[in-house]
Length: 409
Image 1 (cartoon, rainbow, N blue to C red):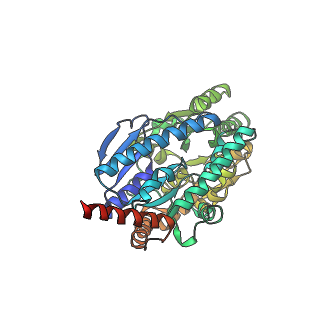
Image 2 (cartoon, one colour; image 1 turned 90 degrees about the vertical axis):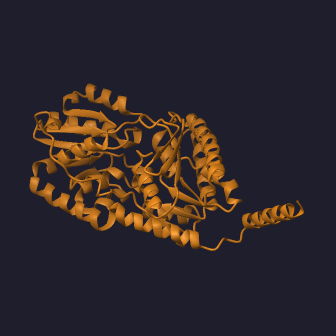
């Protein structure tokens, strides 16, 4: 925070609606202060190392749980809060929230990642140990939904998981998408320097991990350059992640490094410059259970800049982009190359598809629509009568004993 755009937009929307907001999040490069206040929002950061193996998941989750618990009690002692709003991963935050639920705090689960599927996408899930981890993640997911007073899904696929796999009542699940803020993301001037003397630019924006399929994109670029002879296009890759060095090395080995710029994580003005210059946005995310059901921020950001898109055919990618995208066959870099080649060769089609995408963002997905849904969700949550559960009974007992002690004293 505030790098995570979805969470920052949610925090700002709740602040604007009159809430006092404190955030607990991991430290990362460029955002490593343990504590600061940004635009009236308190940010408490803790150290965390991302897991590089299935065994590392245990250490990562344990570290996160320790620091989240520590900081939650720090904030509660300073200013008692009414809601814990937990954005996964990890799916351990219900344990952080549990003691506060006994004290009357409501727990909202904001479902960002389907963790069992994310684990499978990142690591080899075939070993006995990996299968045990996946089963544990499914159990944690069920417990998280069971503990939640209400939950937020990022799309309809996640909403179905909340209801069918998580057992949530449908009226307790709201869809709040990760919509782009059109007051911040506005097309600017084209930057010729990004083209490196070529005519066209294809942009990738996002995390660079194993499941993001950068190797498939590089295979597609190699096919475009060496087989199709397309040497008029530069590729600009914006983002960082555990597979960044590997992707850079693979581009070098594939002989296409002259056609690919890896910019790493960039500030907003540079991101806007890249997307304002680009002719096509590409999403090479591998087709798997995780990516099929997840809405990728990059898709909506491309659409906000009127960029036509090429991606593999996944459920939520198609639900977001519709006719603003061409869809390549499952994990097929040659078909990805073919679809990019088609768009790069037809400027009229690019313009038409880009306009369709921008209209979809403006009418359905932009953050102003999502912020209204979020504040309505909170208004309903805070007005909802307390559920008469065993937790509520324990809390009433605790309160009655406390009042008696005060009276005796």
